[in-house]
Image 1 (tube, rainbow, N blue to C red):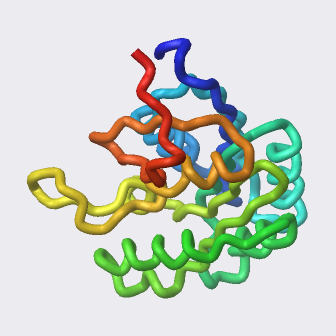
Image 2 (cartoon, rainbow, N blue to C red):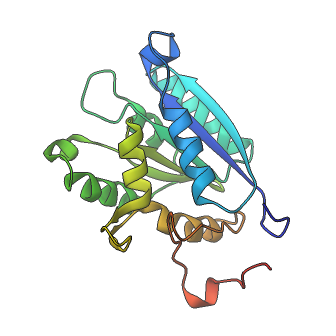
Length: 198
């Protein structure tokens, strides 16, 4: 990575009773780490948490990561209608602002694959200078919602949510995120774009 790209601290949180207690190996954290490493040119410091489906614990982790300077916090899991699924409630409880467009777009993408996408309750919020986004629990669905849908030629059919993340982070005072276009091209208005580092 070039020194010309600003470093970024990203919080990644996998919410799962069974993975956090060792019943099975967590897939959320590796999936988030892999996708972000492929998508961003910036040097990334990951701050990771693997925690059970407990609302107070999830909220506490989100506050901690936000306060620690994570410009972006991504959660995986706990967003369905089951009784133990409380990630959206925990996220909304720590919000300063809601960003409903992210959840709307994630459900639009997932509906291209499964009709049960309407059962997902992912939300996105801003807390201070952190953008916090709830993602699905499955690695394939994580990549699809972040990246969007492409045809066989690699052209975008449905934009992924990550295309809007760098500009959102600009607007809340975070580092300038540079994406790798082949994975996910960030969109910024012309007046918000910086020249590419050499």
